Length: 497
Image 1 (cartoon, rainbow, N blue to C red):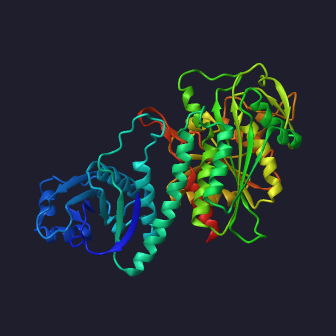
Image 2: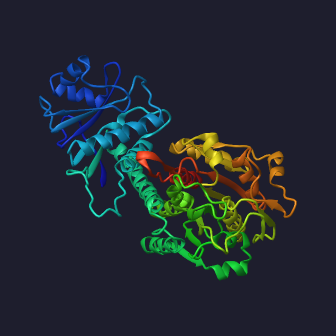
Image 3: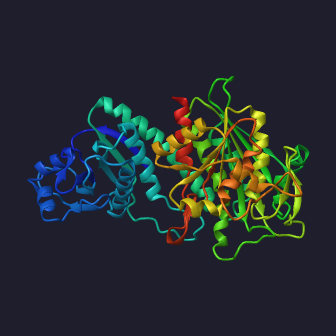
């Protein structure tokens, strides 16, 4: 789908559809006012008779508008009663607009939504968000269906209308950035939605090689199990023992900053299918455990977005990839394994495997002399219990880094919430038989998982993002969301400013 920017008036631009906003009770946006005047009061009449719904995100399509209007249709989008929209409201408006255009048979449209007033957000942000929300709303995963049924007349082009040439340049920056981020989100969604038989650790390694083909600035290295064994990655390899698919440690490097700049390192959990191992999960909804590699998918998506934007930053993406399956050689509850750091771990539950592969990857990350390290993982069901499906859980050993991520979440709309990382919680993972256990009991499961990872990150500034509640949706809308690619890219963009 194509996005572009142009100047012009809503009543004079020729298009299959023109998009304008209205607010309650009968407040027309500037573009809607021009259409109302050119259309001899048509919009005002429809508002007065309540034939236009002004509730936030509601849409009304007007066919064959009267008067001197050049567009074949008008899509009126409700913006609620407040004069200043929240970023969340604006995203809802942009997404509902995209869905209405897709179902309204207009293959191209001109949108004046950039003129809406959004709290503490500028034109570039609004242009970027329209692109991201549109692409998100229209995303379809049908690569595995024998017969696809795309819309008969899909939306192919969306033009954002702005006031003048100065605004034109600003909006183009937003469209360019939004396109790169939307591409990264879509990559993360595609990888997450592929089933475990088609998205194995080896497939993820192939995806890294494909990403390098698209962006030659990337450098890719894949470590096999023998190399990991030489490095002493006993925790990671203890998880892969139950699978016939060999584990991979995938390293992607992007060098957009100065040679002496210390990199940001992203570490993404890549369990391509998680049965729970010997501590096997219940059968209900186990198919959704293909999404247990969404942390890895978000690293791929972020690397793609950063490379496409050409950000002046040094970035390393590390993906420990494996399956977690039961087998005669699989790890058993009570086993003790030795991590790359030399610390020993009592495996009390083989379904707490994500932290086992992450701890070795986090130790490996230290060799890049990072400025900061952020790991991303669908780590604990406890995070879903605590925060639901709206926000990412955040823990960190450095408050400045935590604040950066929280700010990026607010700016991007892909929000996080910080949880404590106190010594009292750390005591819950003490073990009688090893340096630590891989679980800390029923209470505070997300926090004790963070405490476990913190024991491997004492030499650098580190944050952990638990995305178990936000990485995918269940039910009729089942599928990967691509989160937290928006948060991560905004975090990196902020570091470049």
